[in-house]
Length: 211
Image (cartoon, rainbow, N blue to C red; front, side, top):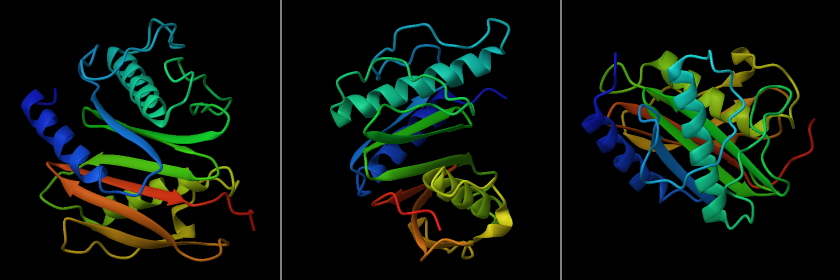
């Protein structure tokens, strides 16, 4: 089903307002991936390394992700922000030296964050099937956010059993402590659910030594 543009626009602006209050040394942006050329973000020149036969939706996700990443790096002051991010061997974006970033897209929106090293950031975004996240979706989003921030400092495949996530609270936003097996101390995950989306961000203040 095609996302409703008015709903996506409302969600985009609501999430942006929340994200401005989060202590991220960098920038976060959202983009409507349903549009081939979002108008509120700087363009990123081609080529985009996707085959022509890839689904249109995948091309839109790729373009929106690279646009959001470029915008985040631009606001961070990186001199080569508008160059397309190369693709690492594992398939994830390869962020420029001296920076770390994260991308997520779901339900017609794309979000990206960039920080200066030694900070590290992980993001996850998912649409909500109801007015609040159910325990399964809540756990998935917080686990993905934490895993992205730790990778590859903790070079283990994603195993949800290694992550201990508190139950979802009644509040629409807050900070949750996530415990990861074999990792010293809990990790703080900032989260918000609004306008049909749940967004979580994990920020590591420094690249800890892998246990």
